[in-house]
Length: 75
Image 1 (tube, rainbow, N blue to C red):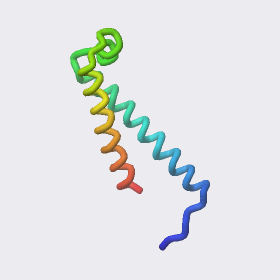
Image 2: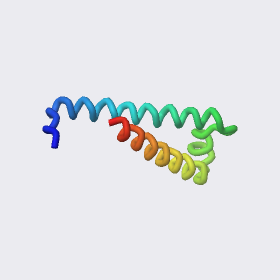
Image 3: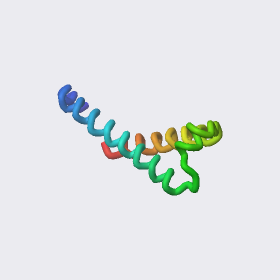
Image 4: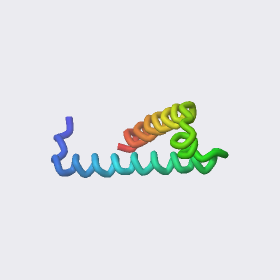
């Protein structure tokens, strides 16, 4: 069993991987908004379209799972 990494190294890893995951989620969201023919924010906020909000939430959860798996595989 390898020795435990120092706390500072763990904090750096946590910060780098966490921020990269958040950035990838934001990039994926904006790419999806560019691809779709409607404005996602307008549909959710102004038109109160619950179906679009559910699909957007499912997309973010799905992308989060994939990004987390990819980051975990790198480590």
